[in-house]
Structures are given as C-alpha cells and as structure tokens.
Picture (cartoon, rainbow, N blue to C red):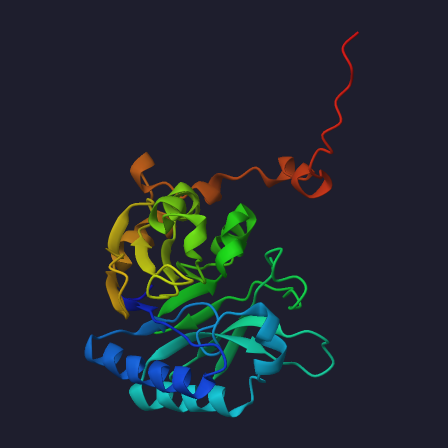
Length: 286
C-alpha cells in the first residue's frame, strides 16, 4: 500500500425487482462517499438487484449492460472505485453468476464471481472459478461473498497473491442471529492469520429480512471501525499503510510484526487437497 487510504462500507436496503431504484441509490451514495474522502466504496451482496435467488435469472444483466455502464461512468466522474453486487448474465452460461463487480476510476471493469454458493443458491446460480486480485488507489484487494469466508483457503490464496485488503459483502438474514458476534468468530481469524485488513458489510433490511452491519478489522484481527445501528449509511475507515507494509516487508524483527504465511511449509500441506470430509463411519472396537 503506497499511502493511507479511506475505504467505505455501505449499508443499504435493496428492493427486489426495482433495479432502477437501487441503481439511483447506489449513485447517490457514491456521491456522498466522495464527500467523506472515500477511495474505495463497497456495497452489499446483490445490491443492484436485491437478494432473492429465485428471481436472479429474470433480473440478471451483463457486465456490458446499462446499469453497470452507469455505475462505471459515476466512478470515472467521481474518481472513486465502486464495488457493487449483482446477478450477472453471461452468454453460454445457463444460470447467472452471483457477481461483485469493480468499477474503477479509470473506466475499467473487473468482477469476482462467488465461488462457494450456499445451499439455497446452488439451484439458481453458477459458481465462479477464480480468485482475482484487483488494484486501485494504491491498494491491492480481493473480494469474497458471504459464504465464501467460511473457507479459510480463500483468504489465504488472496493474501499469497498480494492482497492487502479483503472485502466481505454479505446478504445477512436476521434468522441466523447476531452478525457481529458471528463475524468475529471467524473473520477475525481470516484477517489475523493472513495479515490483511478486512471489511465486512451486510445488507440492511430495516429489521425485516436482512440484518445490517459493517466492521473493519486490522491485520491483527482487531476491530478498528464498526457500525451496527441498523440504518442505511456509510462506515468509513482510514487504513494505515505503515502497519501493513511492516507486516509484509522483509525487515520484520519481532513476533508482533510476523507475517505467518511467509513461514509456511507448503510441502507438508498436500493432504489438504487430497483428503475429504470423513463419512462418519468409524471402525468398531475389538
């Protein structure tokens, strides 16, 4: 990371089948973020179309479509990078992707397609196959969506590829429980083990279907910003370049500055690919 930068995490309510209204809200929030000095602004999972897997096929758009183009034009005009969730249609693919696209300030477009689909999503979406690294405003970052972050390998791959910040947009149903408590059970470990900043955010359903919330963890897994007020808005956080650069540099001298992944013994980890979950069958005692 070249210098300190400000990221923004958005809590917003998206209405299924009201893409135009969701789009207008996204563009308006982006303008607000610029006033707050935000360089990279991340919206929730499926923010553009609203999260309802059974409707995804009908709502899906291509990355070359009008909605993405308008968001891209906004990013260029404002000089900001926008990360927005959508249902993505692709020629030759039967089911849409659950995609988070990146609209860069220079007009470029990138995309992450959710690789680990939840059980309720498998019927309606195609899984992605890649973990791309993006770079903007001097920050290298990766994206994972909701269920993705229950798989530790995702964060490790991103960190090994050079990601300094991980974005974790969610569509977080209220029935699951308290999302701050749940996130801290595993997302703190993703940040700590991989020496990355991590920004998690959930869709705000105003107490109905989804639970809002946002937090930023530093590379030691500590909360450095949070908002769980159940209101639409932007959580901003300035990320320290010095902190991440010390951890990632070659002049580490103490355990406090350790970058664990630099000390891996990957020759021992072949089994993580070869082994599968135990079937539950156990040998009988003699």
